[in-house]
Length: 300
Image (tube, rainbow, N blue to C red):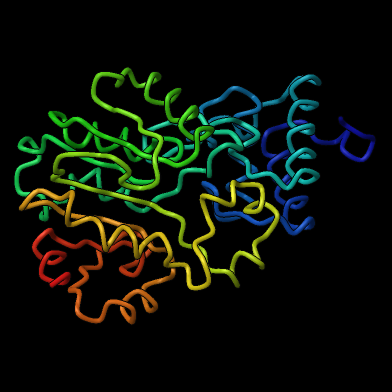
């Protein structure tokens, strides 16, 4: 609620400066859609005012009503006091142009694989129109499964997760995108009882090691730990994916997995696998690709 100290705040510009200062003063952590106080403040202010979240400039000097100012103040204070990621306050997260419903049953979508799917995994997938079967492991909110369905318009997509709660969120997103006929959700541990072969398998699995889990800021602790923690070295789930994926890939299929900062540990654990590290805006150390042939050769 507005106080006497903030009576002078009248415009979006005023509130943006104020919120940025408050967020920095409070020592908030970011990384769930924005990586700094200014961008997070802009997003929360625009969302609170029911304005397009990607169009700040036209509204900077707009005078706000008392009710609007109160709404923004409430959102700013909630973000500081709760230490929840902004996406949990707005129940939405964006990957490029795609909006997804989220709540505390799933981690906030932020996968580097999303930008690779915009390019249909070129040049590693020769003919995107020929892709008929895709798989998303550890689907969470269902975001990558939905992006797979859009990237490969003729494909059916299986998506698995061990969490029934997460799959409820994924179901909502699949329904929102009217993809019930093409995206099929399965509650199972990784590959579970799936049958058949996939031309494309992707995964943004848990990959946070024990030391990093112990040091997580509050914003990350608000997310389901089952979707983050992956044992002492962060490779518990990734090992299983690598060891089992060959049995589920088509002869010319590809496996694409996000690994966070685990590249050194992964290459040490699998010195004979020819990992291809894919270029993303964050760099070349976060997403690897292996072909079906690479995995079968490595298992011999």
